[in-house]
Length: 282
Image 1 (cartoon, rainbow, N blue to C red):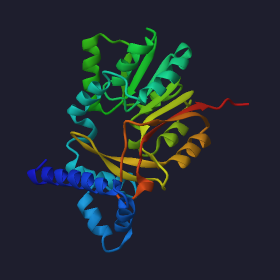
Image 2 (cartoon, helix red, strand yellow):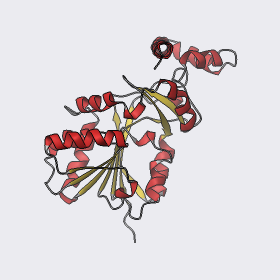
Image 3 (cartoon, rainbow, N blue to C red):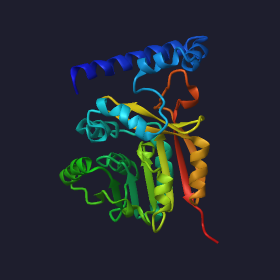
């Protein structure tokens, strides 16, 4: 990334922190909302915030992120960060651990959508002691898969597999989408509908769900930027139900939030988790 673009990233981050602090002051929310809506100031605010704003769809957000992405999802520092975070469970992991613990006795296959180098497998295995015959598939990009395979080989881990083939999710006991649901287009519920056999359970964690209409934005990670979908919560749940699932549980991922200045309806404060079970037929 060029020095000018690095400077732009710093400027966008500073502007977002400053305006978010102003928004948190008494009367600040109303002020920022008016600035975001007034035709004179709205374009100025968007210009200052750059990629950290609302876009109509994932393609628009990806185009805004591209000059500043620094590799996005394939940045090797992302794998390092994910493995570091997995050294201990985060608050939202406990709901996931609870549900997976209840499933593990009858679960022989997990499909980890966007599971990076298998960080959640390593983290959850320490607490749940997965059986030796469990197959944990991680669906990832080729560059990330290479790093994941190397790490698994170094640890002598045979239960962890990596794939680029979405059809490997067919018939899985559990589909896990932790911190990844919002990166996929078409959406995951449409991808599930096309599988020969849908997974029996779907566990979503750490996803930015909102009250406003579904839009998109750019997540600003420490070392990378990536476009993501801001799903309307009610519409997302309804879409999974139409695909054949029933909502069993939902929770907050209180350690994460995404604030869009002046537009609380597009802010995810905090992120969310959802657990669905495939409805029995007949």
